[in-house]
Length: 320
Image (cartoon, rainbow, N blue to C red; front, side, top):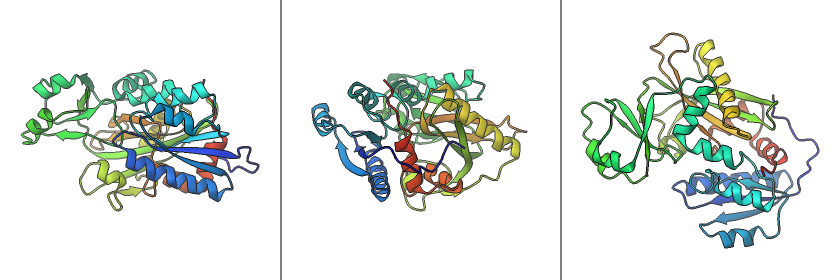
């Protein structure tokens, strides 16, 4: 078990970055403020920094370098390797994954190809340009999923079924850039959190099943109070449970991730054994809000929210 309670903290000052300029900035603020409070509860000196699309301001805010940066940014700019590159240049340790792993995991299709080589089953799909999407040049028969190749938190994700009258509206108004179009996997939504401070000490926490009234774990289901129901641990066959845990760790390692990640799966339970389990994506900057999955799984493993955030700070390392 890589999560261990910190008996003798080494870090004194922490700068928590949140906000940003992506579509997930509100969630980032909620994550950042929750983590800042957890760190204060543990006795750290904490500076909260609202990040904007202004590099000069960020560098000024970080001119008095902290011992560690807690990166609570989500989406474009904060989760795709950009902010990680800035922090690498400054030489300051930061939480979560480094710039290469962050960029790779944020590119959904490249991440799928990477983890597939590690023996993880992925959903069939391809990348299309925004022009192809808007023109309706989609070579898959419905049902299929259209989602941005470089967004998180289920932003811009649409399930298109046979005869769906939303299709023309979705296609003509597509504004997310290139898209992943992949075969829709019916069944159940599973997710696994992974934690590790080095490549030899990485393990999965547990498997959660997520259900929502909308039938799909979309943005509202993720972040609105009561938007989803989490079953911890997931009530699935033992071989499916164990395989999801194993594949989450393999994905974490294959992508070169550090700290905490969360990997999402679809499980078609109409298929036998583990043949219905499919990898969807790995989130290198999982949400840290009151409804978030990683803190919930850590709690199941016996770790309080404050303990988890402290562990993330104390095991942070510079990626340069």
